[in-house]
Length: 293
Image (cartoon, rainbow, N blue to C red):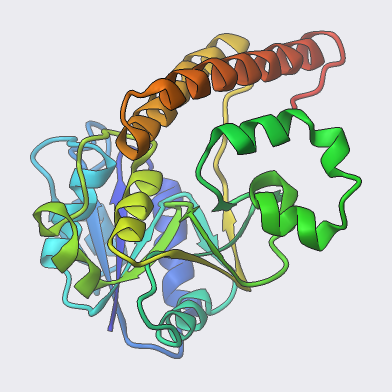
């Protein structure tokens, strides 16, 4: 059985849309929905039970963040396969059944992700490589990489160079649709998902920990899920998020390499590259009136 764990925090309408899409489209596997309300100050969690009486509702006494909320849901779940599903996703086909069938085809597989798109159909880049000095330098030389054939370029880099058009092993996948065998948790630190990050970066950390245990991540292109993922266009908000993401990326690198010379060289390159990209985005928004993803 697949346990679909969904976290709600003040997103009643989109969470309802997500639950309804799971119920409507999941046909070819046994599943349950475990909804964790992370102490939403404005939502009445009992309203979910009124609309969806078959779900299992967990009321967290606090907003402990994404990881802690998911661990609460997993503790109450009965399935041998766990799917962490963001509340701002919408299924349009039987994605859960297709994904679990693919998961069970592979031995020693870590977290599995699927093809995610924005509501306008544009691809979200969810099959990722871990950052490295080499990859950051290659990314800075993006025009030269375009001289390589697509197959070689995408296999080398993944991330934004990959069109999401084939199944592939990767370093990490998005937490918006994050499926794994429950047995994987038995080997993870504390036998649960690491809770050190309150929000953002958890998926990358969990995939790193699974990979270190010999369970690489996998991207499955055989089904598509819509992920709303509404990002702010305000420059001040983007800068705030950028600083947070930079801190998370550097923390992940410290876990991988320690605070060695490699770490400090990587820090300088990544900070330069991301700040340059930020100012290009600000220019495009203010001068050209375009928001660049």
